[in-house]
Length: 142
Image (tube, rainbow, N blue to C red; front, side, top):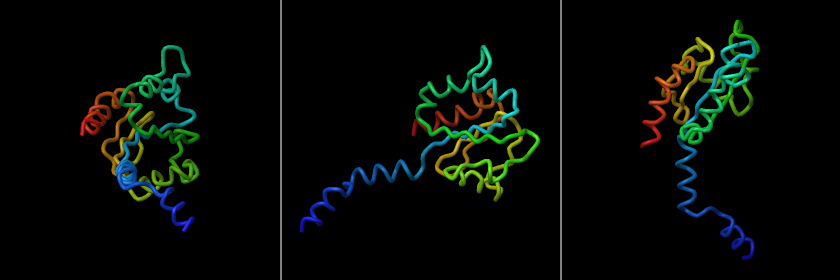
């Protein structure tokens, strides 16, 4: 009896479970594709004076509303491999490996996912601002 009461007290309520399921079902994720030897990636990351688009994005309402994931390979000249992805990022490797996500063609580049569905892929900060952000804002208004 005591165990049953304890289990009932610890079980999530219907509304919070539904809310959690809704959030988990299709979170918005922005993936930043990078390479350690990419000078434009260094600029995006804010390691040079006058740069820092990443910090500005993360401080923006859009940046605060998404999960932000960085995938960084060692060299621009080498394709992404399974070793470039953390265990939490394996789903991204599967997207590339199966062709569900197009090949990464420029750096820095960005992908917007709703759940595991690719919404848009954009290259460079200009692509982020002109292609990805409008799609992200559209999704956030829903």
